[in-house]
Amino acid sequence: MAITSSTTDPSAPFDTQELRAWRGMLRAHAALTKALDAELEAAHGLPLSSYEVLLHVSHAEDQRMRMCDLADSVILSRSGLTRLIDRLEREGLVARESCPSDARGSFARLTPEGRTKLDAARRTHLAGVRLRFLDRVTPEELEALGDVWDRVLAGDDVDEAAVPPCG
Image (cartoon, rainbow, N blue to C red):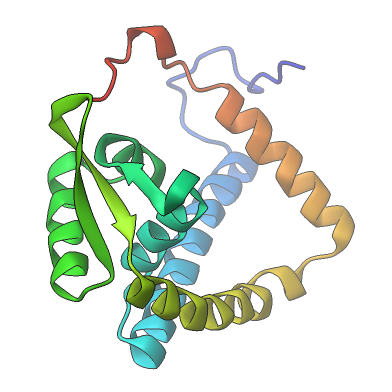
């Protein structure tokens, strides 16, 4: 189902309803991210970005993930992810492994210490998301929000075939 704007000029200023929806999404994301980050940092010494990396790696096959795939999953640049993985490696939470099929590629693998840290942080994170977001909306609103985000993300104009493979 294609949904179009109420205006025929895509560069026209937002009307009140559009502005409220757009700014609301941005402000809610910023506020939730800031609160969840502070909570994880205080309770576990683990920033939200590190938690997300550990979570993605934990869900990957053999609890290891190609660095370029990980960068795409957590929406970080490759250089930003490299710095973050360097720190997580120094802390003993992940280990790097060479990619046998591609000398330029590498994997991030979750260590037992990383699993322990993630498991502890996960309880804090889930409770924070429930308190600050899920408990504030009805099941019907959750369904509607899920549908909205699916539509918004399906509208991404990136041609996946044109994106170069990991290397």
